[in-house]
Length: 284
Image 1 (cartoon, rainbow, N blue to C red):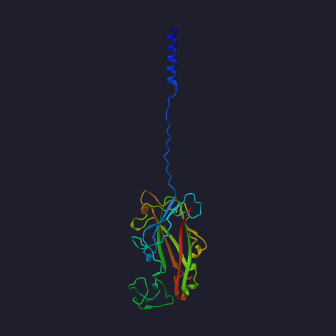
Image 2 (cartoon, rainbow, N blue to C red; image 1 turned 180 degrees about the horizontal axis):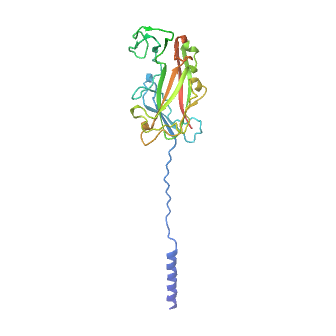
Image 3 (cartoon, rainbow, N blue to C red; image 1 turned 30 degrees about the vertical axis):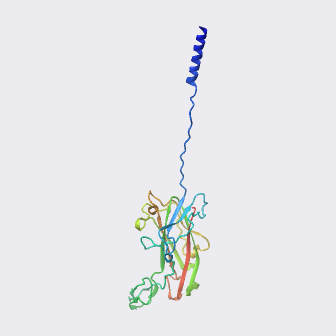
């Protein structure tokens, strides 16, 4: 009888332990993790038009992660690109200038006449063109009709960025050998939308940043070292879309300057002047 009571009590104790003891469980830790780094894509042409350059092409793929402010960003596309023709649609590669001959001239402040008919090849002053007689007064002058060069390139980003530029390789001939980089004036414009669907889902990246550097007035101002010409305070991409839709358009404009308010004056004689401007993406 005592053994039965003992075993009964022991059974109750064991049952109680089983009810209160923690159950063995398998612990699983799961940690999905995604990280998008800072990237800036520059779109231009693979080479100049005279070298059969293709366009549009992503010519720079810049990584801004862990890059100190004011330092050039690593570009994982090895080749350098060139700008695009401003007026062409779809955009084509710009010219390297080797095909340019005589610039068209423009009669200014004439009292009558002075109409120029430009026959093929267009945008070149040659013997196939014709000019009507024109009347003169004290203000009549002759200037270059196409005194500026305008090109473009596109930038798409998911983060802020800076654009630096440096002018080099000044080349002059004839009477223009006395000219320096200060004779090529400079202006940089930016648009969030363009023709052909570019920038339809982009935003103004200059907000929150320095935007355009108005202190850069000519190529001499950016010749000593890479110089900041634009500071973006936010990404170009405004809403979901393609690189084409999220890209903004940068438009560099260059024009010759005689120092007296005109693009060209007879006193400057004849010759050519050109330079190379290199744009690079920097960490903001």
